[in-house]
Image 1 (cartoon, rainbow over the protein chains, first blue to last red):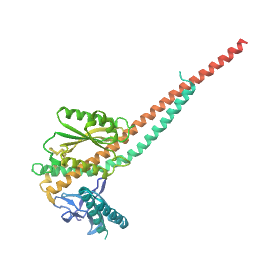
Image 2 (image 1 turned 45 degrees about the vertical axis):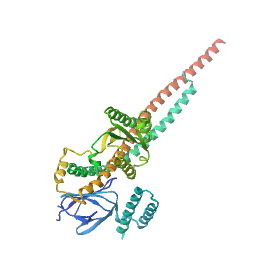
Image 3 (image 1 turned 45 degrees about the horizontal axis):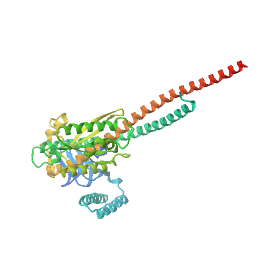
Length: 133
Length: 298
């Protein structure tokens, strides 16, 4: 029996997942990292990307994360996601529509604050598109 | 003594008031369920965020260069108060409680020579505070409530407060809101938002364990970078939680208030109907007596 790690995925609105899994690959801002049981404690920020949950060596779930934080202790992995969507439920047309909106917002942004905000949003949506491929 | 016609009109008007209050009660009850669920499901995120930040802050607070959002500006001359109220009334003491607490805080702080600024969240708070503290109110945010509390709204507000803080507009920021306990009880709460209240004594075992493991954490990227992105995020999350709590409290308070109003209306209708029937009977008796004595006189 492979040791399992307790995985919790929380978004601001609610607790999305709380289960025992074999391994989770987290898209850290400094590169992806896999978390197994007895992982060294780590605190990391997350870049927009896909988080993969493994069970018996197979990917059982792929979840898109729009950024956030991950906390690893010996027994648990807690991911605080700003936004989390299961990749299978993403729809290409919808993502492309949001991409167009974000690009438009970037073009009309006239203050530096609005600009960085629009750039961030665009980065998230582009990562979403990559996740779909 | 009211005439029969007056009584009939009074009864009709109380009846229609009762219809309105009982409809409002039912609407509040169904909104309450949703608001309560939202408030409860938002708790895990806020709690974990707080714990994570607490761990980080405890390990970094002694060092210089920690973000002022955590450590403060080393002064507490200017206070910013965020009273969270509803946009609408008819919900019992809900708004008044927040306003009373805010007034007390303003009096305390002003008494010890501090400058106070107020950023009202919700229209009712502004309406009540405007009269005597109008000069202290920076602005009012009204668009946060609505049907359901959106995280985006809390985010906008959070960024605005962080912006004000960085511009040096205040040193300490406190939220005043109703914490939801049950449909009939809401607890008025003050929560210090900036600087982050660092837990000095670990109060439960889990926290103690987390603190024990702290030294072993690896950070990706550096501690400072994580802290710099997590600290403003925490402001938003705590505001979001307070908004959700306040929303649930509002619905609970309104439900109770409207329940009472409906019951009062029922009592009043009973009273008025009794008076109406008595008066009607008195008229009939009087007319009969007139007819009989008229017939006897013949």
